[in-house]
Length: 295
Image 1 (cartoon, one colour):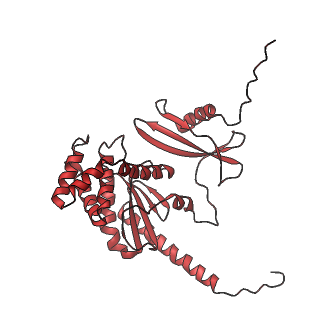
Image 2 (cartoon, rainbow, N blue to C red; image 1 turned 60 degrees about the vertical axis):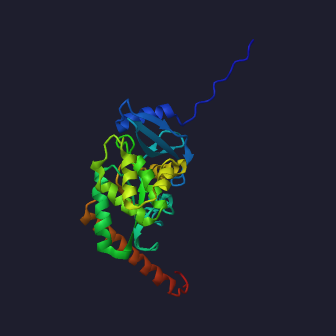
Image 3 (cartoon, rainbow, N blue to C red; image 1 turned 120 degrees about the vertical axis):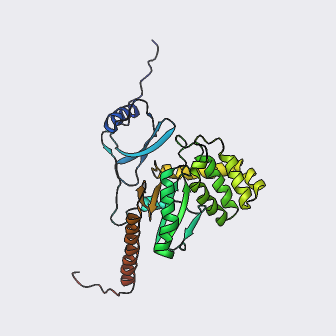
């Protein structure tokens, strides 16, 4: 009698069942493609696993994090806070600024503002104008602003080319990058929406501004430069960025356009918080505490 093959036991985590449930709960239409990662023990929530769900539709992508119980029956979604830690520490830990162009205050400025932006995005143009013009004037060296690439390829065909060019400009100096940054935002409408003339227009701009055209041309075709842009995009996905502009204000995520008054108010809150924290630390470090019986 032939040996019978045993069917492996079904695990508690069922990707098919999870996808079906989430499609219904989150109202994802059938055309949305869903890829579910394998669960990993959660560092934030005991007894649960982190499960990343990757969505794609018409070339656009979005990443969502869910917490799944060990028995696969409970699903949690949202931000987990630890009252003993900075509420935005998980974002701060993922944000990398070592290769990002910046302006404003010193590295130890009380406020760090990181913007994920897209050179073809008209809303980004509005936000960048506020950041470049109003924030330094209002706060001086109290705010340092970093720029990160997040081209939305599905809807902005020349945004990635512009981002790669930006990395090349940055390699020729900070001033070269920021001049290019301001020019390309101001001239969004001068480039064809489908992006066919983006490289030509960028090279023409470079020749008029004294940028090394030969070096720029080689850099535009360099896969390493394209990889730098992709690393910025991957970082954005890890932070669940799905729209531009997205700002991180001392780690606090602000999605979409933020008007000047609101942004100034939020920055002031962060400055005040830094002062309060520093004051509390100073008091604690300079007080001698004597243990008492019963206390």
